[in-house]
Length: 238
Image 1 (spheres, rainbow, N blue to C red):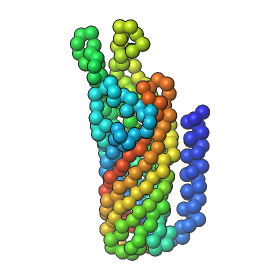
Image 2 (tube, rainbow, N blue to C red):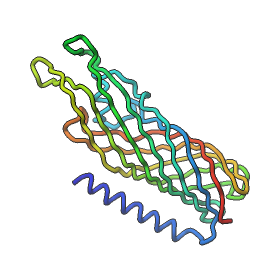
Image 3 (cartoon, one colour):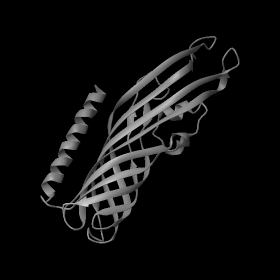
Image 4 (cartoon, helix red, strand yellow):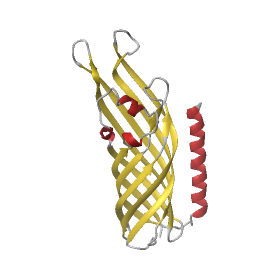
């Protein structure tokens, strides 16, 4: 029921933002289609949500939080709404599998007890941006904010120590949770703009947390983090 509620909220947010963009955008406004390539850096241990499953897992599994850093790829459509404002809608993809072993336990044959943690994020992001130098300037710094509908999937698979067993039995298993969360987003960047081609760099931050079931070591999954990416755009509609 919680997932369904968040899905309804996500759809409502998308419809409202789409209506705002449509109402504010002239029919022949300048538009840019961006390809983005970069990396996502999830929140570190000291910045993660209370009750986060990775923080709980880190107490008995061997991994670094930076092991979850990985590449992102995406696309974004930008539409000017006047000389200094633009709206955007984009999609990106991130996925990372981190192999781990238990810190203080080994199997009966003295081998490591291996397990993997897998995280996938597919944010659909709607933003509004301010371009202080204007759309016609060759150098265009910008700042913005918006909302992301973050579709996520988290899984743990491999061998698990059954701490409820007196002899600490090792059992194979797979545990999966998924859903969609609404996340506020802030961003900033700069681009070099020609008549047709633009390229630049951007930093953005999203903040969200998902509820997990009782099968996991922690009740929450922190979805927040930083994205650092390069942008390559094609301009049209002038």
